[in-house]
Image (tube, rainbow, N blue to C red; front, side, top):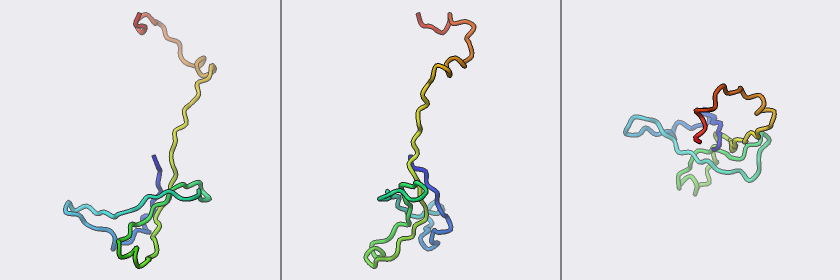
Length: 96
């Protein structure tokens, strides 16, 4: 999972298109950075260019950045087990 922060004000209105369903869409590109930035971001978000814009070398519009989210497993310690509440009756929880 990658968490992205999008700067909505950077989105050019002329690139936002209205679909047949009445909803508004814009094509974006999510790409990995060569190096992390000062905030630890590993990815950037940019407005997609048309073929003509790429050939004309139009400047890229950067509109966001983000980083990979990785859940860190919690290591269970004996102290954590000791703090768990006691069970009154275990006769109905064991299958044997």
